[in-house]
Amino acid sequence: MRVKKYLKGFLFSLIITLSIVTILMGLTGLEENIEKLRTFQIKYAFISMFLIFLKWIIETIIMKVSLFDNKKDINYIKTFKITILGNFFNYLTPFFTGGQPLQVYYLSKEGISPSVSTASILYKSMIFQIIMALFGVSGAIYAFNFLDLKSFSLVFIGTIFNGFVVFLILLFSLNEELSKKVAQKVTFFLKKIKIIKNPEKIMDKIFMNIEEFIKFFKENSKKIIQFLIVLFLSSLQLMAYVLTIVFILKGFGVNIDLDLIFKGIILDIGAAIVPTPGTAGGAEGFYYLIFSNDTDIYTINSAVLIWRLTTYYFVLFIGALTFVFTHSKKIGGD
Image 1 (tube, rainbow, N blue to C red):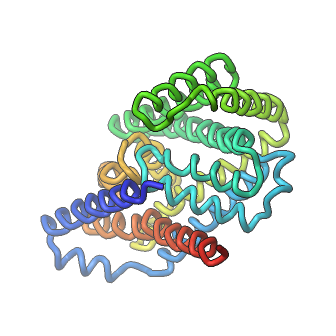
Image 2: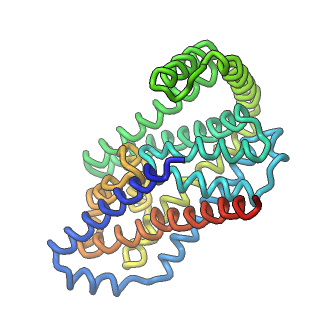
C-alpha cells in the first residue's frame, strides 16, 4: 500500500484548506472572524458529524444490498468498517477513486471473490452516480430559474461529469470483449514497466474474473426491487451530506430554506469535478462562490472552516483510527 501517496493527499488538502481560510480571514480582519467563530452554536457541529455517521450507516446498508446473494458472507459490523475505510481512502485521492479498490480488497479478505466484490462496488457506485446526475439536473433547473449563471454552470458541468461516469461503468460492465481488451492492454503495459514479469500466466485468471464479474453484474442489474432500494438509499446518503452544509450555516443563525438546500446540492455536485484529494481548494472556493449572497464574509469564513473540519477532516480522523485498529489487530493476531 502506498502510504506516502495517501499522506501527500492529506497534506495537500490540509495546506490548501488552511491557506484559503487563513488568507481570507487575514484579509477581512482576523479579530472580526474570531468574534464570529465565538457566536457559533456548537451543537450544529455535532449534528454535522452525526450526519456523516448516518451517511456511513446508509452506505453500509447499500453495500449489503449490492452484494445480493453474497451479503450473508459478511456481517454489518465488518461492512460498516469497510465503508469507513472506503471513505477514508476516497478522501485522500483525486475524484474519490482510491476507496473502491480498497473496498474490493477488504471484501475479498472476507471470502467474497474479487469479481463479485468489484461488480458489487461498481453497481452501488453506478446508482450513486445516477442519483448525483438526477440531483444535478434538479439543481441546474433551480439555478437556471432562481440563481445566477455561475451556479448553473457549476452544477451543469458536475451533472455531465456524473452522467459520463455512469456511461463508462455500463460500457465496461456490459461489454465483455471491450473489458478483456482493456485488461489485456493494461496487463501488458504493467509488463512493459516491469511490474508484472509473465502476464501470459495470469491472463486466463483475469479473463475468468471478467466473465464472472459481467455475469454477476448483468444478472443482478435486472433485480428491480433491489435497484429501487439502492436508488432510494443513495438519495438519502447524498442528502445526509448536503444537510451538513446547511446545518453549519444554521449554527451561525442562517435560516434553512429551499434555496439553501439547493445551493448545498449545487456545491456537492459541482465540487466533485475538482481533481484534488477531497476536492481541496474547489470545495472551499465554490463555498464562497455559492453562499456569498446569503450572509456576511465573516460567517462564510468561519462556516467553511467548521464544515470542512466536521466533514472532511472528521472522516479522515475516524478513517485513520479504523485503519490503524484494523491492521494492528491483524499484526497482533499474527
